[in-house]
Length: 159
Image 1 (cartoon, rainbow, N blue to C red):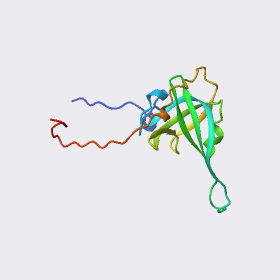
Image 2 (cartoon, helix red, strand yellow):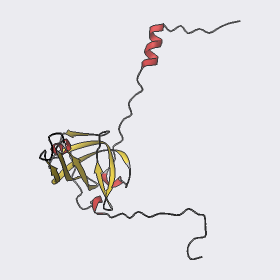
Image 3 (cartoon, rainbow, N blue to C red):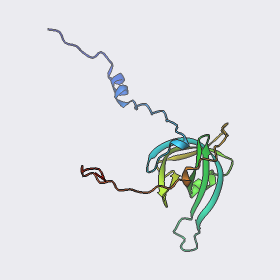
Image 4 (cartoon, rainbow, N blue to C red):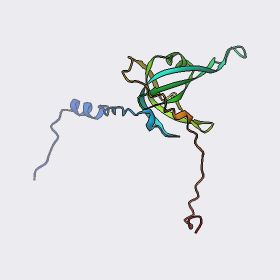
């Protein structure tokens, strides 16, 4: 009768079990491929404009943080979209800069798409991109309507 034994040293076994799984390579997407109510997007975009829409100071209470929100028009060679920058993000998204947005999501605001990065995502300012932004395809100008679809298995309408 023969037995198979593991000839790996105990220290090597410990190293193998503690090895971190490999990080996934980010899959970069393009602006024109963004869809409503989706998340996990990674993309490179240029900042075209930045317009402050809300700025609440500390006048109400010393304990409250200052809240700043800006709508920034960002884009790549496939189109543009409005990005909602919050607090420290406002300082990163200055017109003319190129940013990498990681784990961004699409929020719906008054029936149109807005791109945002929450605490689970990241914004990095990077070297200027060498693409020309396609400004005539603004996805935030497309209006969406929520339609409830009944799945009752009945006959199609009009039959």
